[in-house]
Length: 338
Image (cartoon, rainbow, N blue to C red; front, side):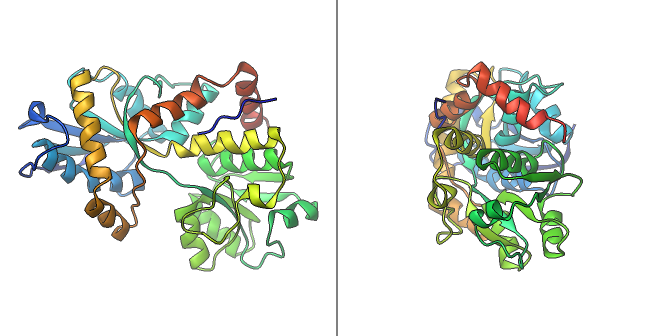
């Protein structure tokens, strides 16, 4: 029985504000420049989160905070450099924890970082993920998909992007016949393909799912989690609608843990403990501030903070606590020819 695993830069912006009392001694940072690195281009979700949080870090640390975009290889290039940054405590980054964890598990060529070695400051946000189908699909439940006997076409950007990987986990867990069709430019393009009848299904985060369902481009049939999604409180979770055995639950839970890594806020491995403690306390103060949370909601940049210690535990659960056989099973699933 498996053990269940639960739970050079463009577009820089400088911000300097008078610091209020911080949650920890921020004296080291007063008058210094702190960089928040973003491994993706300007205008995307990670960039938006970094730019929303930067003025708050500037205010609390008494520092100039600069956001730097370093796109390339899905964030891997930036993260590789970040993992070897100087021990000055003057860098942070928001990592796509889900994508980075999958890259590390699979041993993707070029990976030179270790998520468990980074100094975790907390998780800023994470999503539960949903299964969507065509808006006029005759299928309204997971049971309908299973009973149809059809091979369900899931749209994705690439074999190893979040859409494709999540769909692969889901289909394997419940033995749903499916085909991952890559080549779409993100989930919005797949949602349009659903509306046009070109694709059958989409595995996507709840925030994106909410927009696609609200616009009429898709229909939600279940949340791929033991818990319901915040934005879909009336939609049953997969464990509510299917009786899953221990093996199936393991595949659901390990995917949920990987997805729970979400947008991880981290410092380089070499960061001194005193600076780690300051950054952790400051991050917690910001990410649990009601006004900051409300600001994020207005921008549709939701904040769901997870403590640094729990983020570390989750990273270890998916990167160091899997057995050799479990890692081999994941690799076999995601790297098999299709």
